[in-house]
Structure formats: C-alpha cells, structure tokens
Image (cartoon, rainbow, N blue to C red):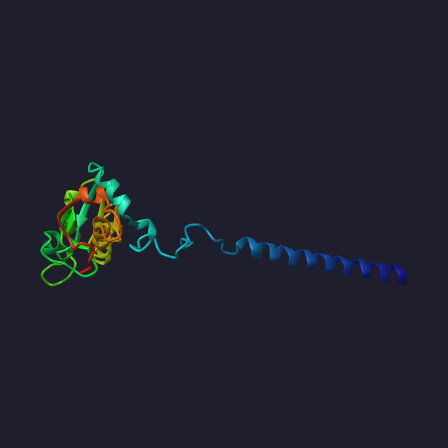
Length: 202
C-alpha cells in the first residue's frame, strides 16, 4: 500500500514538473515572436541620413550627371539659385576658377523664397515661383552647394523631383579651366558669360 502511495506521489510530482517546464518554454517562445523586428522602413540607410536630407548621396549629383541632364532639356531643368550678379558674371566669390553660369540654367535667387518679413513664403506662392518646372525633374546649384541644398529642401517639400549639384559653380569652373590639364570641352560648351582666371583661384 505504501509503495502504491509513493508511486502515485512520484507520478504527480513528475507530472507537475513537466507541466512547469512546458509552460516556461511556451512563454519564452511567445517572447521571441512578439519582440520588435527590424524592418527596412525603420532602418537608416548606410550613411545614416534620411531620404529627405539634401546631404544624402541619393539627392546629390556630380558634374557628369549635370551635363547629361543638360543634354535632355525635355526631362530636366537646371536652376541657378545664386544672385543675379553672380548669374550674370558680374560678381565673383572665392574658391572658383572664374565667373559665369551654366548655359540654359534659370536664375531663381534663393532669397526669393522669403517674403518681406524674412519668412519662407506660403506653399501657394512658392509653387507659383517654381511653376516653370512643370512635370520636369530639377537640378539646383549655387556657388558651393550650400544655398542650393536649402532650395533643394524647399522643392522637395513642394513635391518636385529634385537633385542638388553639390559641387556647384566651384566644381564647374574647375572643369572649365585649364588649371589641372585640358579643359572639359562639354563643360565649356554648356558655359555662358565665362571669365577664365587662367588657373588662378579667386
């Protein structure tokens, strides 16, 4: 009789033990499946910059890209966001090999995005300012890529497909001069009011 009782006790304890183990494994399994997963949408890109950041490489283009865009005017419009004086070659800023502008570029001074109070204009006024873009894609440039990065953000927020020529006029004028060898013929072809400093940075 005692042996029977002891056997029953052992069986009950064993049953309780396995039940507890099974429950513990089940809760661990639920914990893994319910933990947050890393999705592509939540990840930063390789350089850690957001897609709406003008410094993100996907939003920047180089000289060769600009030349290709200039050869496709039905698809692209190039916007010079410098002052009219810079655009007309009447004003020079440091670090460039000459003054001038990219042929075919439309001058829309960055300062025009501000109203009389120095605040950014409302969306309807900005759309009117840039209505010439239409359904084309745009490239913006300035002297060194800073002012154009700001305008890139404006146009991006307005819904345009836009790229920033980060090297801007400094890069373009470098290719247009003979300072580092033979001047880029295509760059010269797409340059207006060019004043070459003969390899001297001013």
